[in-house]
Amino acid sequence: MVPLLSYTHPPSDFFSAMAPDDRIRQIAEARHAVLEAGSSSPEAMAGAWHERAWLERSWRRCLSQGQRPDQAVSFDMVPAAARRRAEDTHHALLQAARPEMQRLARAVAPIRYFAILTDAQGTVVETAGAVDRSDRRAEAIARVGVDLSERSIGTSAISAALGEQRAVWLHRGEHFFRDTSVYSCAGAPLFGHDGRCVGMLDLTGVDVDERPELQHLVARAARSIGNALVHGVPHALRLGLTWADALPGEARDDALLCLDAEGAVVSANAGARQMLPRLGDLAHGPVHASDLFAVPWSQLFDLRRRGGPLDVPLWSGLRVSAQALPPLTDASTATGPSAGARPSLKALEHTLIHQAVRDAGGNVADAARALGLSRATVYRRLHARRSS
Image 1 (cartoon, helix red, strand yellow):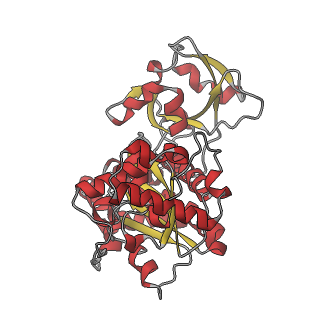
Image 2 (cartoon, rainbow, N blue to C red):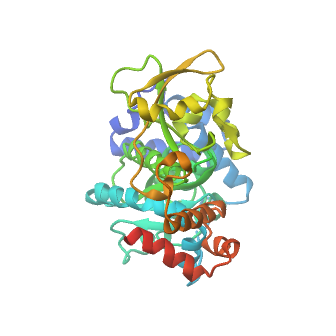
C-alpha cells in the first residue's frame, strides 16, 4: 500500500491541488488506518493530515460512543411545529443570518451546494438555496428541526465546526459513517454579541466535486453574521478598532465593539475579542470601557464629533486607533441620551421589545411573558417595525 502521505509541511492549497482520485484514495487509507487498523495518531495522520488532527479526534469520539462506520444512519423525524419553535427560540440569530444565507445560496447554486444554519447543539434552524427535495439524501439533512450533531450523524462539518470552534472542510469519506460519505461540506461556527457560540453555518453538496475553497467563503459569511449580531444589540456608540500602526484604509469593522450610554460594552465581535482579551469576560458579566482603555471613557463619545480616528492607549501599554462608526439606520440600535434627540414613545417601545427578546436569548415566548404581552403582540410589533 502507498504510504498515507510523505509530505511534512504541505502547502495550504494541498487538497485542491490533488487529483480527485488521489484525494479519495487518501481518505480511504486514512479511514483504514484509524477506523479499522486502529493505528496511532502519528501513523494515521502523518504528512498532509497534521493540520487535520481534529478529524481523527472526531472519528475516535464516534468510536468511543459505540458508533460503527457501517451502521445505517437514521435521521430524526421532525415535529410539525419545528419551524415555529425555531422562530421563537432563535429569532435574533435567524434575523442576522438570513440575508447572508441568501447571498451564500446564490453564490454556491452553480456548483450544487446549499446552506444550512444550526443552533449550538447542531439542530437545523434554517436552510437556503436550491435543495433538491426529490433527493432523499438532501431532504434528510435540509429540514428545520433535524438533529445533525456528532452523536446523531457522526463526523460532519457541523459537528466539527461546533466542537473545534473553527472553520472546517470535509469531503466524502471524511464523514464518519459510510451513509454520509455522499456529502461534501464546509462549516464555520457563529459567535454572538458576547462571544458565546450560538450555532454554525454550513455549505453542503450531495455527490459533488470537492471545493475546499468553500471553507474560506463560509468563514467570511460567519464573520458577517457575527457582526450583524453585534449590531443587533441596542447601543449608543459603535467603535471600529485597528492597531495604531495600521495601514491606511485598513478595515475597521474587523474589530468592532458597541457601548451603551454609560460606557459599558454591550457587544463585541471576534476581532475585538482577539485585540482586547478582557472582552472574553463579556459572556460572564459586564465589561466597561474603562477596563479596556487607559483614558476617561467619556472621551470615546467625543470621537463622533472628531470624525476621524484617535490613538487610544490600552492598559497593557499598547495603543489602538479607535473611530466612531456611523449610526445604523435601524433606530433600535441607538439608545440613551447620547444617541441624539429624545426618542418617541413608539421608538422606546420598539427598543424595549427588542431588548427583551435579546435578553431571552431570542426566545419570543419568554420575552412576551417578561413584558406582560402576548406572543402574537410581540411578533406583530417586531414585524411592523421591519415593514415600516
